[in-house]
Length: 115
Length: 108
Image (cartoon, rainbow over all chains, first blue to last red; front, side):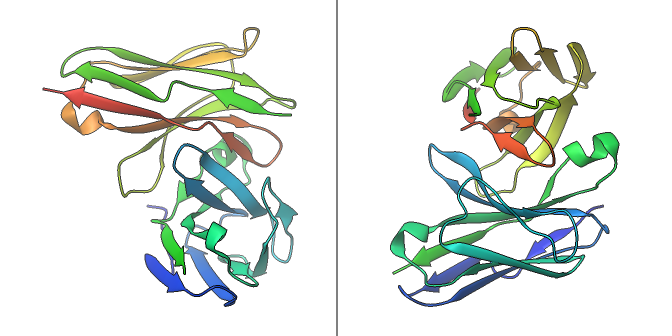
């Protein structure tokens, strides 16, 4: 089974702190994604990566950056956390092969509270 | 731009059939996916349609009409465990765009 793990289930940070959210997948997937999920807004794509050291902006990249130094690991960085970044953060991965790339496998999520 | 519309909430009773509709507006359309998410859980993949027509997987079926920019998820023989949020998502190049989700409540 594909496994996507995220470093924390719950995180509390203060405004202005630098926050690192880590995601690791064990299926040798090329594509990795970071979403945030807020009530009534669904899943919104922050950044994605389809190869090591590659990154692409999603729909809401402002205030975030990412790092993909290894194929299995995709990190989301909040350079200076703000209260409006309080949210559930979901990481996902998918294969780069044909139809399989349409199936994204999600991690359990990190619920971040910024005070 | 890209947008998806699906109902915010649907209710039904055990054993019934429910249909969750999804209309979309997008460029570069490759296909329509459906994901299920239980409260507190991660979204899990249910189905994917790239071509027009109906695809069946057990009690769940998914339909796509590319000419109408429309699809639906059909859940049959509803069970209490089907209570969850259901998201449609359109595939563009390399990424998915998700709808805002439909919360399904199944009552005994």
